[in-house]
Image (cartoon, rainbow, N blue to C red; front, side, top):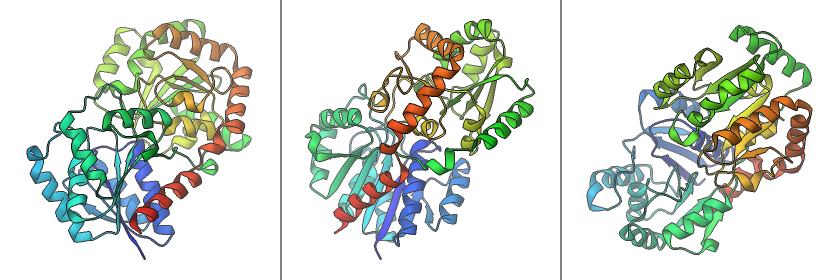
Length: 384
């Protein structure tokens, strides 16, 4: 039985961390001896319990990475901590899940020093992230120590190859995927969820619920949606907004909503596991993001047959065709967001058709089964 160690350096829970849970759980079910290590912070304790319940051994570890360094000598303590962890667990292979190319250098160096192959999955690669020449050279050297890179979209593969000065062919692409059965509800279930959500919100049963899922951070573009809300309410006064997620910009967003006089029309849900039910009870998913790898929330919406309004950020254009599978807006374009959301509310039947198209045409390429299978194949290959 091979031993797998899954690592992530983020101090919060999001799509990348849930991805780590999915792959580690699948590995445990496939007779891997699966281990995971991440911060022992209180906000991650529920996630630690979920790993344990899935048969994955959890190790609290001081490997939080804020991306403020890119040189070896500036972070020897982190490298030593990661090396000690790896030596103690003694895995056959490591899966490192990262939300940016500025993160994760310490465990990458530690795995090289320990002689353990590592597969680094980049859930997000930004074009505006600066890479020092020294950092490029370090990563090229690390590649000689059985280190493999995975991008979640072709757009991210291209950026990663430029940032690391590598051929695209040397970087795997494994698209994110979800379990359709978890999100696709029956007509009766959807009616029940619509009634329950509106009752809990205290809004009329015929209210339109516009759902946004994502961390409350600059990346996700909630602030771009806010100026559009008064215009949306002017035409569709029975609209209510649900924002699922938590993050550092919450107070700023609440203040902006108050300034625009629409605070009472937006409900902040915080982090929640009830995403399938929320999607079943909502009318539209709005995803005004500025940059992405390949967001799970959009794939989940496809699986739920929930109509989508999103932006053309990064790899999203690989998934959807505008006005065929979803409505696609320009990044940071308040007017475009407003017009597309209004069109979606004005044309519910057309939006349902787009959702059906996305489910039929695009979802088969973004299944959890394919994501897990390809990832485990890479891990098996580099550990041989």
